Image (cartoon, rainbow, N blue to C red):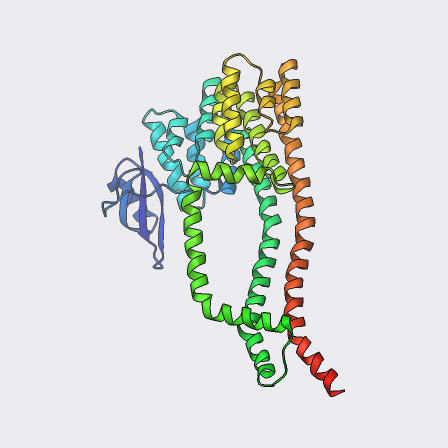
Length: 402
């Protein structure tokens, strides 16, 4: 029996899509008719559509992937084989994209491919680290345990990213709204108010003259400034693709007082989480270090990890190799050394990951508490200067009248 993707029309005229198991496309159409569906397209899972184009592989978000992995691990822990667990997940899934993805994986399993190779054919949803962990679970016979840890890792990583996102949304909104207010003042309000003063014969204060000059400059050059901003963003994106530029920029970022330590703590937390899962799943340390490099965002830390991997391959301990780079937090390095000396590296990596997550949360709170008042003071200062520049001529006229 094979799986077929279909598109059909219901009795009330709605268009539906899904996956159905049948021995042939003809039988699939007959089964759909029995369900009251008029199928106008039925194709085998993984084959080309009637238009000749291959259906694109759907992409699962972090939350959907976490839920799928946890459900899958629960079914495997109950003793259900991988293929039957996939069939159950397909039946209970409400999203067409998820059913299509799982059906394609199921067909690969039926063709004799191992699970990690079936997952690797969908890199938009399952990254190389995910596939490496599944392969380790298959080899060790502990696939349910590995996938449960994978779900925990996806959940904690998603929570960490959510914290970072929440910490950056408010400052970004403050900057956006304040910039819009200042632009409206400079381009619309200031010219109308200042026109009243320019009609008189008095000499305007220096601050007011500077405000008028700035407003005139912005009104004349805003199209060029907008084009320049677009060009700058496009150039920055091109430069960001070069490793040399990213390494130089991230090297300066690491040296910043608050932001640098936060970025290092964020990458260290992801590294500790990944190594904990890999080492705890029985993956050799060298293989785990090579795979964990993919989760590090900062290039200086990624290069330091690559150098440490080489030293470990030559016989050095992981603690000494990481400590020599002076790029990773000392507490993380000491906890790794404690795990190596006690023979419980996986457990200590788990504790190190939790400690680094707590440090990221603490540093995020500190950065937010510092950044928010600084932004408010900065934007308030700009508005205050504009208001003073407008009020100074009025105050001078009142003094002359008295």
